[in-house]
Length: 353
Ligand code: MG
Image 1: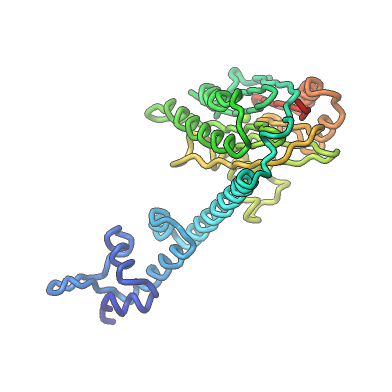
Image 2 (image 1 turned 30 degrees about the vertical axis):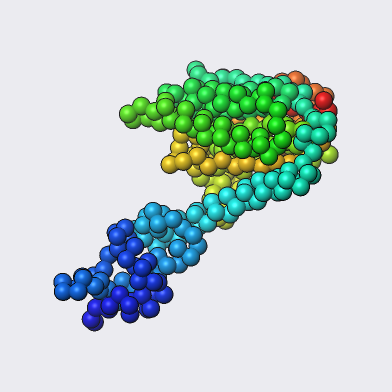
């Protein structure tokens, strides 16, 4: 079959000639030939499917660099890449939506953060190496306003990465600001922490770390999260997990390809898909919620959450009269359940100032 002019090809694949010229310049869709006399681009009918795929990926907002990667994949892998991209879009949109809500409240004077008496934390922390490891790559920070846990990957620089990540957030501990400003500052601190973690890279090793923190602002609580460190909230007797693990196995569960019951025994259960120091750029989950006196927060590294299930955590957090006792009992129960990893946990009760 003969070659198609750019005009005919553009109409066939519902792209503009201008877009086709751009995709040629970027090497995404070079024409089959260029007329030596006129310089016009000519396309082969076999190029229609690729052009249509590019157009559809553009329609869902995928950046050109990612489209190039998707176009180079076999169909099954391309499908997975599109699915992963779309989940990221949904997560980012949800995070922006929450930020927008806070912003609307702030601009319309409904932000109670700076006008009402605030809340604070009564807290206890534990950070232990565990029975078999010879180093501890977990780190914690706690004050009456800020709770943070980081879990550095085992290996060189892991402990420094976790300590650096926690320190970057701790710098915001004394800041007094409405939740909306604090969220922005926390996001910036996470970006700074990511940059700092990347400085520990050697020629063949990039340490990574999780970072999860809760910061109170007036009567609200801001949450930042990246990795598989978790935040649980015990409120009115019910235990809620506020964070979603940024792990490979969680993404399989989300896609319906893995039974949640199989997560704890999956060989790649600790493989992170998001962490400080990993990927091209840091992607952090941000949220804000109202605080209630009587709320009890638990932040913990996977050293705790992989050995104690939700029912165990619920039982200990409900029974312990105060955060100190909760941390002591969580540690004891984790060891009794066969914990081998480093364990970091922070338990904090919300109290009025
Ligand atoms: Mg760990």
